[in-house]
Each structure stands twice: as structure tokens, then as C-alpha cells.
Image 1: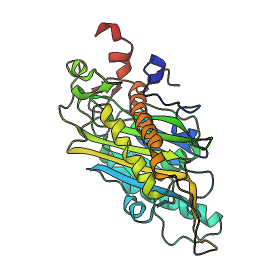
Image 2: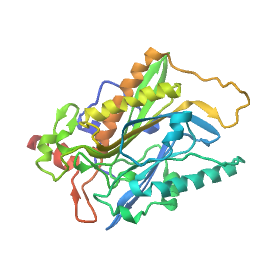
Image 3: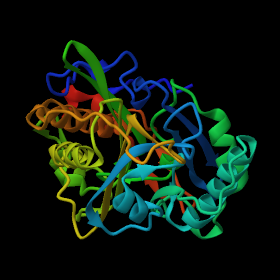
Image 4: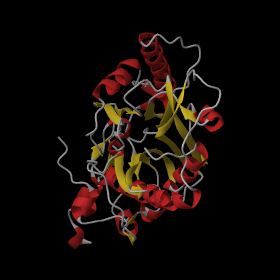
Length: 351
């Protein structure tokens, strides 16, 4: 069990918003997250799967959106979301060279699930995101495939691990050990509470640029670690909500994840793939509707600002949780990436 503490437990409170009960993306009802981690002499890698709903997402698709801050990435499935505004499979995160194998595994999983629901699938759009973990992982071996994806789905739950687990096992963020992090915010409309949740796979940032709640700590840390002086790598950000919005409104919301990213010190540099995928569990779109006109609910446009703030805060805190919950890791070539807890959070008075 991970004995590290999340960033909030150090008294570092991001923004003014109220987190959900778990302060994770799974505060959105129906959302679950599962990991499989490979951790041996050669491999520091894994897969993380986000299940967007309890039922079959192909039969009742979720309203979805994509926003690409910088496109240096190898993700799959984003083009159809951009065109149709729907998500019809789980979302998987892994390393760069395993995207194809994970995509294939999700395809097989969805075909089987639809067969069980007596739905014939002739086309399906699995969504796979990636970060390059080759600094710590022997990525060329491509060890993530169908068994790991299936197990991650079976492992999925509402209280999942963070830090150097799953797709975050081998990632590096601001020169430190990165990983998987999550956070959430509660917002209210017309007397009802809704959730904005964020999950990140962090693998970006120049060490000198790291900021924690506005405090520039990276310059001090950069002198103590061997790290890139440029903003390179990638970050995958998944935003989930149960707010009734259109795909266009959702895209406006998920763009604000970039605010949280920048508050932590990212410039979204040339070599960084900064990609956001968002979905809402409201406004489901049936695979074969009974009527030609489908009714959905949307939020009054000017009221989106609360959701903008929530997305920015949740993403900023999720990034910091990915750092706080990670451990120091030694990669297959002897490369060591130290964790934020060892270098900063447990020794604030020493800096």
C-alpha cells in the first residue's frame, strides 16, 4: 500500500473549490479506474483504464470532447470524438509504443461486451492515450497488451491508487518521478450538486519551472537533480463530469485543464504532447435511437464559468497528487528519478 500522502494532506490547498468525497475522478457517479503495473529489472510501465460508466458505453454513448494543447503524441480515437462528439469505449492510458496493442485489446473487449448485449459491432472507436516512459522503462519490448488491459478493467474501482502505478509507473514530471494523479471539485446549479473530476498521466515539464500553489520551487530542485532543461514529454488529462452539457460546451470546459497545467509550471513546449479528453455521464446518445430527434439538456452558457474554474483547480491538484504520491524509482539503465516527497514535501525547512 502506498504510504505517501496526497498534496492536500501537507496543508497545500489548491483553489477555493470543494473537492468530492474521494477527491478523485471517480466522484463522478459510475466512473471507475483500474491499473496494471509492470515493475521488474527492465520494465517500469503499465496501463490505466478509465471506465466512463457502469453500462455498455457503445450502446449508450457518452457526450465527449477532445482538446489538444500541443499535438506531439500518438493517441488513438481522438478524431472520431472530435467529429461526432461521443465516447463509446473505456479510455486507456499506456506508453507510446504500446498504443496499438492496447487499442487492439480494447477492440476485442468491446466486441465481446456487445455480443453479450446482443449488439453486432462492425466499427468501434477505442480511445488510447500515451506518454513516453523510455527514461525508466525498456519501452522497445512493448510488454503491455491484451492480458494487462483486461486485468486493468477487472481491477477498476472507485478508490484507485495514484503515483507510480499503471501508465504512470515509468513517467517523469518536472525532472521528478511523475505518475497518475486525480482530484475533483463539486459545483452547484439550480440547487443540485455536480462533479468535475480530473485524472492525469504526468510526463512533462522542465525541472526549474515547477510551481506548487504559486510557489516556484523548481529552481531549487533543479540544482539537486539531473533533469531536462526544456519542457518535453507529455501529459494526458481526462476530465469527467455528470454536468448536462453539449460536446461544444464540454470542449470549452476541458480547455481550462490547460490553466491547471500552466499553474504547475508547464509552457506546453514543442516536445510535449498535452492532450485532454473529456466526457459527461449526462446526455447519453443511444446507438439506435427510437426517434430521429434526440433531446438533451445543456447549461446556460454564461454559467459555465464555475465549471471552468473547477476543471482548472482539479487538474492542478491532480498533477500535484501524481507527484506527491509517486516514489523514487530506479530505471532499467540505472537512471534514478527522485520523488517530490523525498526532495521537498518531507523537508520544507531544509530548502
